[in-house]
Amino acid sequence: MPTSDNKATLSFSDGSPSLEFPIYKGTIGPDVIDIRKLYNESGKFTYDPGFMSTASCNSAITYIDGDKGELLYRGYPIEQIAVHSDFMETCYLLLHGELPNETEKRTFVDTVRQHTMVHEQMQFFFRGFRRDAHPMAVLTGSVGALSAFYHDSLDITNPVHREVSAIRMIAKLPTLVAMAYKYNIGQPFVYPQNDLSYSANFMRMMFANPCEEYKVNEVLVRALDRILILHADHEQNASTSTVRLAGSSGANPFACIAAGIACLWGPAHGGANEAALSMLEEIGSVDKIPEFIKQVKDKNSGVKLMGFGHRVYKNYDPRAKLMRETCYEVLEELGLKDDRLFKLAMALEKIALEDEYFVSRKLYPNVDFYSGIVQRALGIPTSMFTCVFAMARTIGWIAQWNEMISDPEQKIGRPRQLFVGSAPRDVKPLAERK
Image 1 (spheres, rainbow, N blue to C red):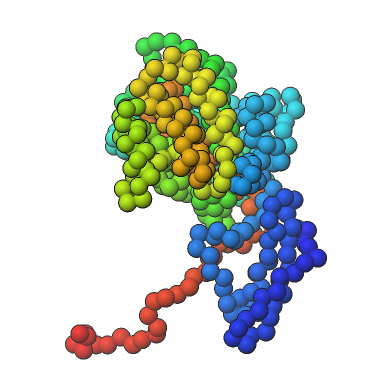
Image 2: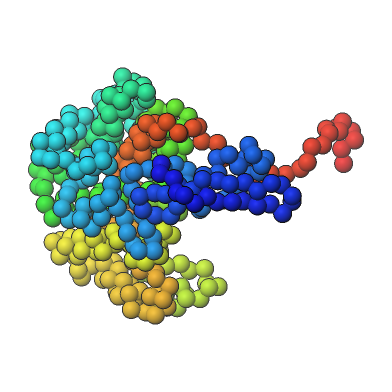
């Protein structure tokens, strides 16, 4: 890492000697202060709940500038990737650092296609779940179970094993997500059809059945592909940090991705687009929007506007503009512009973009608002939204995991704490305890 000529000096009011720390400069973004020697030299830790001011690693994969509304995959703006590349190219980019040429893309796509099926015994594994189990519960278990079926690629010190595991997870996640859906609704599993594109193959596995021929709609396939691209990676978020933390112990990649999926399941993380759709259902109709907006503005009402604003982006979410275009394309293609829920969503969007209360607070519609609407239009049920998110984010997780394993500076994760419990004390005999 390139160091700066500047150093940070930490002084103490308790008489302890001052300490100097090196400052590192990234390619872009804030400088970081290297505090690794702080504990050894001062006996003190830093305190940073949620790691809001702490860089846990160095990474060359994804960069976000929340103030500018900027998202870069390996240096390429998301606006360009989403328009000029498909999801397979995005996967290659995140894994290998560069966009593929025609030959590299063809080889990569062919390799992924060779791994789309899952072991036939996985069918019996699925049958151990209740039919009404949440698809994310099924997905967490089934991805973790992959290590029991594919133990020929679990040596994390072997770059070839890591590459094979990465390809397997990219290839098999759509199959497992579709299986979770089919199992939930009581339909037979649909095997992959490898002459289709990645996104078309997934939609066929989701919606085909033995009774009729499935027809691929390219507009809908392109919409799903864009959802996958926009959600492929998002820097050191909670689930990505979970994957890295699990991986730092030397856990196998399937277990690490399962840990990421479990974290993503949390409503504060991967459940945002589901929450946005639930909010629209609760509002019910366009004529009830004014009352809803009034409640949102009332701090004492407890009513929240879901799918608007973003913790990282203090300006417009760059993915939202792209997802908005796709949203309108899909609604036009399916003739859904007069659908009750979609009319409600568009009316709410208009108010949020024009009302001074929301504009001044930069509560713009985010990617989750539009992607939830698009997924519903594609026929994907709300309970499956986070599974689709996990399918998209798997490439980001595996790229981040692979980068971490290859980093000579990486150590097993071990956050510190500020202990506020009881001081040392003695155990009293039972009879003496009050």
